[in-house]
Length: 129
Image (cartoon, rainbow, N blue to C red; front, side, top):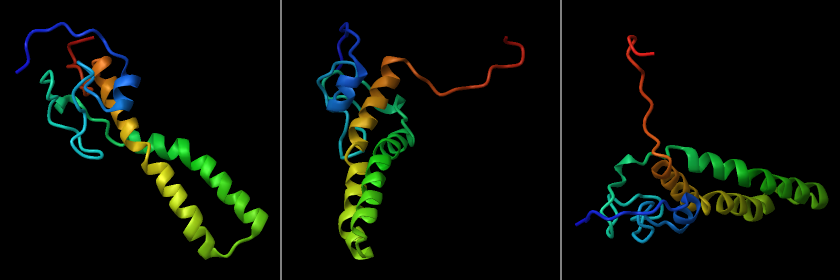
């Protein structure tokens, strides 16, 4: 399985967006569109440490919704189309613009967790400073 190799630090932006393992940069990070693989098939890194939670959805909605909503408002103010035009044009654009960046964003967040050695927060006992 995994031998004792030295893996140089890889930039999370590059490995995450490409969907590659944060340690070796070669194995696949995902086993589905958004489902993380259990481990890297190249170096054996266990991906159970990763928990990006709602981060990818938050970033995708925040980044993409404002320009798309600007377009929708412009379309409405300029042409005053009926509601069905918004359902046919605006809604699919909004959905695609928010769904397509989810995988690269999730990969980037998972690789950033590995790179920065992020862990679940825990409370320190009262006798520790």
